[in-house]
Image (cartoon, rainbow, N blue to C red):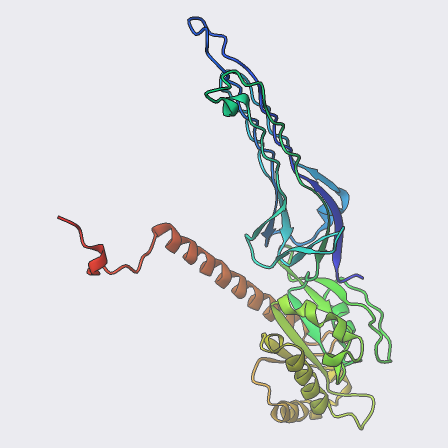
Length: 369
């Protein structure tokens, strides 16, 4: 399926170093006793969610990730050095699943989130730990524990910044073709789109965002009707939804207002949080409507539909109004990213300053004289 970026990897944590059985051999210490040090801890493998990583392509070619083992202990009370942990950076939205038992290990939903994929083994004990009053020359030691080993499946269910919503034949595939590098199948019958399509929209050389087109929704989608219901969950992490409406349906009996309200109803039934996301209304196929009727047709639709957010008028086929819409989408996404970064920086600053709400007059904190 094109919409889900998937990869399978194997992670092998480092094993702990073995403990050492050694005895002191220094001059003027004839009964120096045991001095074997412990082994070092093996490296642990961590997953870190990073907003600067967009795909799992790196893990398709790099299948095995192995952390280093801890060093063995040595004599003269020398402990083995612990191995450094390994960090695997993954896109926000990655689901990590154990291939053996199917358990979900982690759902990387926030930037900076860290989860253990494979725990490093503990180092073995040297013979200095086994000395007692009755056993002054112990030769016991323990070996380091083996690091954890796992086979994992990584699924990135959200690659898109923007998700397209609409009834079948609303023009979603034509729109994503007009503004991005995606080339989905386009035909004049319902359910042409069987699988989600992703496209990268280039605003300029260094400015871009990803848009996703899912199969058209129909009434009853929340209960499983049609094809689009399978992919509604993928839209929960997108930053913006575009509700594309066909203002000039083929059949005269079709009411665009009724269909648009039915789609919003299905969103609310499936997930109220999804329905509350920023949703822009995009009125499509204006090229089919005579120019002297367009303005009145748009006003009547907006009034009957009761939409309070931004409204855009486009023709995906002739590209009329599409570039203005793309520019506004990018501005919205950039403003959202900057607001999130400022919020994170403010939170980190407050934590660093150690802001406290303790009342200095509280009798529990009086200084004793």
